Image (cartoon, rainbow, N blue to C red):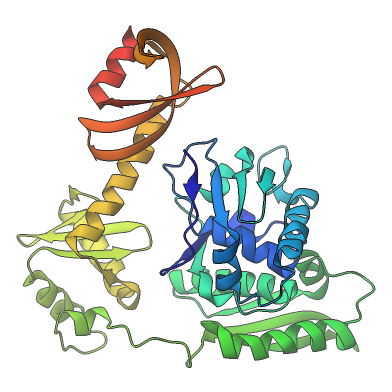
Length: 397
């Protein structure tokens, strides 16, 4: 069953840093098209998942008022199919992956159907560390491919620096800057790069995105050889979301670690999330990702939380349970990936037949004893209501 792409709500784009740093050149609409798709991807999606995007929804989301929307989508799809990414894999052999964003597409006057290129799955659906995440709304108003790419790169630098408490600044050579953004050599620095990319980006960032930047030109003699970027949150876009101190009703000095920790320990069933880690306070003890920490581990964790207290967000139980379910579905898929299940009873044309198949998807998850497994046998797909115990039994048959 195809998965329909949602274009409403608080959508977030999540990419591995390898994708952020990859070399590719797409039109602004093509970047927005694939970004909408990425904002809907889940780790539990089948490797052969088909996605469906309503043209009307995409038109409204991107603010396209032209009647040429189908022509523009056709151009965007051509872009995605003809212009592959170049991704350095960072292994000992210096391997490089070249891949298209999508593997084929079918479209008509109402919708577009397509699949994500399978080799990109580890960089988009299975990312657990070293990734960039931002609100989709930040790039939708941006008018240039260069400006969108620059936003992602600066946002990545900004989040990385904040993660480790460093200054939000980055120095990059002009040559490397050209390579990262795929800027033609025919573009002169002053008339093209500075005026049409950097200055334009500064203006659009200030109006539309959650970060702003200044830049300094570093010269070797008379030649500008490097750029120094100074990146910070956009004060016009910073939402007054309550920080941990306000949410928990705490008042303490900036560096008063003991008071901060003491006040937190008074709270019951407090759930804290930072990056991909979940911390819970249970009867005065600290747990991380569901596991109680010993004294030494807990002390290190408290220090980490205090250092990054402004980045902590609070979750309610429902939100936490949803995240846990997604993780369990992912773990099940990972455990059975590539393993053949034998003698599975399925109903085909009203008759029970026994097939051998692979698990390629998990859906309708209730708990480990009640979920639907999507199975693939040859070129055919089947769905079976099952449990983890049953799957293990089919594996042993």
